Image 1 (tube, rainbow, N blue to C red):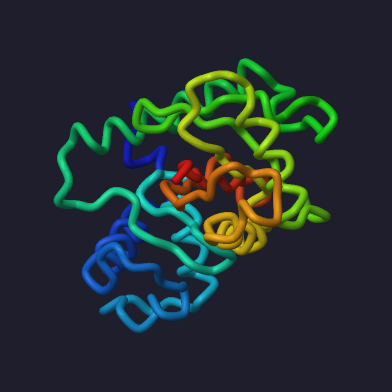
Image 2 (image 1 turned 30 degrees about the vertical axis):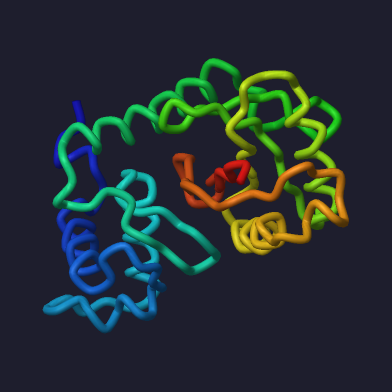
Length: 212
């Protein structure tokens, strides 16, 4: 059971979380934008970034770009909903621990065959690397979606530092003309995003794309 002592900087993190919810609700924000809304706290942008990183690890905030965040669990949501989201993260961590090679594979290791679930829907993993562009990701996604399973879409996965790169590719995959210029049979629409990992240097960004 987690205690206050086992959650680093939890008091300051809660203040940052509540200030973010009051100021931005479910809209994206940056650490710099947040700095204007922390009443009574003398914080630098780097201080806020550190606390936001902790809040991402705690599952209360999601990182949606290199420096863009959004509240993941709102304070007015039910305990049940918070528990569901915590369970999703626990399942991911359990998989990474019981399969140590899961986050160290390469494109040749059939990464696209790994499945993740979100809200009872199944998504096939598509790992995105620095050299990837929308054409290569679309080709991998098209192949992955032909597994024959009842798939709801794909989940784009990458290092936390490349989240902006993935967001830009996802925007193109959601464009109406993507089926005209790639092997994809359907466009996508953006869904849930998440960041998992125990340290800032080892975070994995995930963006779920549902078949439109």
